[in-house]
Length: 133
Ligand code: FE
Image (tube, rainbow, N blue to C red; front, side, top):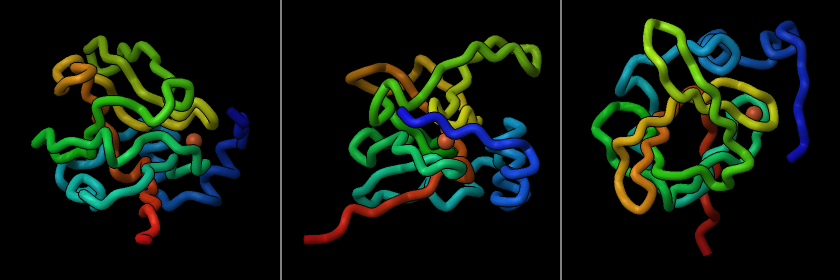
């Protein structure tokens, strides 16, 4: 996919401070604070920084965590997995493959068919509804 490479100053100018903190500084939003955790409409979830297509509503499930949860990315090449040893834990961080923005983490307690739970900040995503025909 097309790489997006911007300086911190450019991202800071483009993104709301709370989105900058999540996407570019790997902050975690408070659970149940994000609008998209409760979104059940059909559509595509794209990167809040660069617009890359990351997740589909068809893979979204109700995890009860308070964060948008998906059992797989829309395209494995669009979501990069990185070992994260911050905060005294070993976790798998999910980042946008195009712009390297932080999205959330991946856990192995998800539902079938993958058993994975992509636990993603609502602030890291924009939702593009499928047009009704
Ligand atoms: Fe991105």
